[in-house]
Length: 367
Image (cartoon, rainbow, N blue to C red; front, side, top):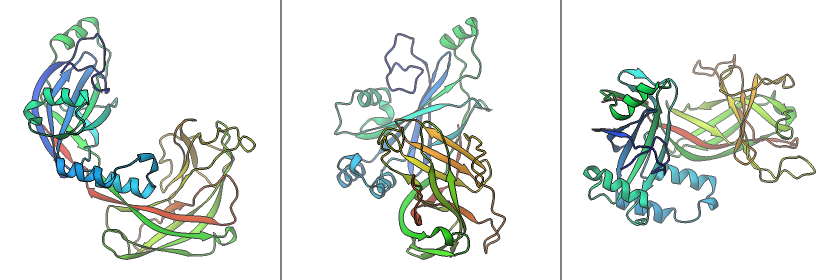
């Protein structure tokens, strides 16, 4: 297989393909066995593929269950589909090459192939290239990792890297925790004049254990975000601190509905209709958002940031201070946000959307 130094699969080009170093490394993650069959060496860096075998029966059952247009999926159905998919890629957080950690970052992409999609040229190419692993397999997945070198090579070093690459003796990877999401229903609406003093509750049933939990919200306050960024209108929402009784298990965390889908009419805002989706994310730690911009006008907010673009998903990130108040377990109270709106609401709706469960911790694999 003639591989290019690109995350794109089988990209066209006239440059020389990478030099191959056979490895046949393997590891287990999320109940699946993954293979790293070769390392591709380039003058700019290296590329390796993570190949995963999948069970045909599981794949057919999955597609039969979720057959249809993905655009018509409800948020709950989409969450169920992501959780039930037989393939869970090994999301790599850190990489070490020959004992040296990669500091400059790396890129990745992934694809899934199946027997009943034989017209897929890329799938056939991978089956041929990795025949020793994929022989007899009707379904498989591939992740490609592109790791550039830290420094730009000189002319002579470029020649050495291309034709006489240094063998990779050791590879160490650290994966992200394996997280699954389950939809949860529960909401409460609070009047603005009751935010600061009232203690409101949301009762929900744990989707896995069936146990009933109560979320107690307190110390609420209104948040107005007078942001003038690419024509965004003013946003209104409320924040609050909460405690869960009985507490959730370690690695479990509630997710509140903070995404807002609204049509921005030309009369109200210069943002085109359906141009973006807006979300508000509260963090319990100061400065937790990586990309943020200060705002002198937002008195109740530590820092504010916007990510995304005019024709894609956009989110407003808000980082708040740690709560000085502790819950019954001696830990800082968690924070949450109501569903945002471009118009000041008569009541603020705090809505639980899902529960995040950590199925496994970070893992380190050394080869």
